[in-house]
Length: 491
Image (cartoon, rainbow, N blue to C red):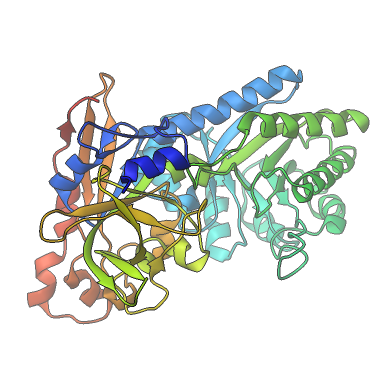
């Protein structure tokens, strides 16, 4: 019978730039030996590999730099990080090392902006694009940023939002943007996005509420599409419609000079992933240039707000297979020491597929399996790959060896959607979280960001105020997060 490594060799091109195995037939993720991390920290375990974030930011800058040069594009390119993808401090700190800008979506993003400024991570010239449907606290915080001299641009989501800034902004000048409500995909549940201003209302909003007020300048139009940047007739049709509207508005609004392209570049969810990033960016820049030239309008500066593309491929979740259960003649279950519903909610709620690979035992024979989580919900399972209708993992003997598996490119949204540190289905705790970095000499370092969630924190949230229980855990995670950085061998 063939071994698991033979299955991979005949199915995909392996090794890849990101994945390889060492002499012990154990998986390397970006040349990080995962078994060493498991031996040190145990499972279940979330891993954040920080260098991947900087790599993706630089890649995007190069893509747009190449396209701008190729088409002699006269506008500038600005990279913004979409904070809702992951709000963790270590993520923001890594992102801001690349001197990029930020896009927010909630009132509670703004205290994070303030904290980053106080730490010297951003300056008042850093672009802060404020998106989303805004309740009073959000508009208040935005106004305070503008009044304090921050380069904050609220993106108007409806016709009434500007009324608040008229009353609360005391600065001499406030730059504004308008989000346009795009049409959804043809097979979506409704026709037009609930967010943004209708195409037919954009010019009247400018002429009636922005132009008459000398402190307001409309600088940007915002385009967002749920599919992300995708080579489809739908994407190109919506982008073209948006650029034509930009040209129409530019003719009556001279200060308009920028567009914000929301909906980011895709990330790799399969080892057979095939996406020509440069070709897509080239096509975007060329299309914008062609439409603007046709309408005798200067091309806009281009902003992007990449979230998943920034952080998605930096994340991994590692599990141990803790049991094997043959439930009928052909359905074999490998039970993990975690939960898909609580720890990888997109895999359950959206049928999202991630790259799944065994961490060890690559030299063992393989078999078809289903992966089951710890909750009592029948939907807590994972049984297919993005490129295959079946899932295969090495055969192992429970009493002789352990089997570990990893899910990769999980760095965007999963903690926030799962309610990190809160109450989970069946009270499954949030797993340990380890940050992996690399020194200039190639040495890999790891540090424990957070211990596995303990029962006391859950009881406290639920209103069980027994000091004898709560005192065991309150503050313990904070102490752990201050733990020493540890080094692995340079790989």
